[in-house]
Image (tube, rainbow, N blue to C red; front, side):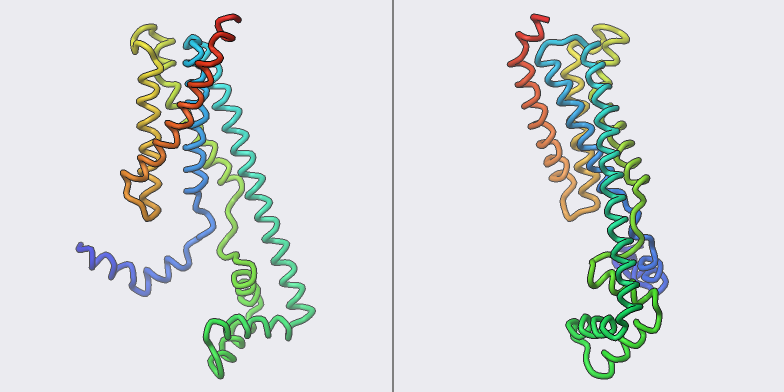
Length: 252
């Protein structure tokens, strides 16, 4: 099918209806991207600082796994709490709108009128819009929520947002540890495990950015390079700190 035909198919009445009726509140791309980036950055930062301090693979794995689980849980819990708070605020705003419509229907009807007048509607068309919207209580409240509070669609699930963050954090954050786990299982098989870990993490960073670019207006190579640059900077800072504090580690 041609590119033009694809666009035509996307704009049939059925396709448009399905797209508009789709659940817009359950997209967890942001949660997954943040979790993946933070998992890779923080875990590799721990590994880099430990490698800079000259610590053994066993210690690096202990520190890395502790960070992976604790920071992953912390980030997921924070996302859960934040998403839940947003949902609670939305429910409160909806209750307030319901009460306002119940107590002051004419005032709320005038709000609808002014909202759509500001969009350029007037005369009989404007009055018809106001009449249709205010004839259905749920439609009336939905319109007020969207136009006055900027909230539309179903609220995202706090549990799903937290799980998306945690799973992405663990999966991508575990990549930097792979080389050290191999070195612990079979010493010497990968030489200095820090360098293959760096390569694997760099590939993970690039892949995260490339995937992200598919959902935004950005070339995949630029998206990959951007995320790789952020990770490399964080790792360099961590390695430098570890190297500076190496005398302390050697003295333990």
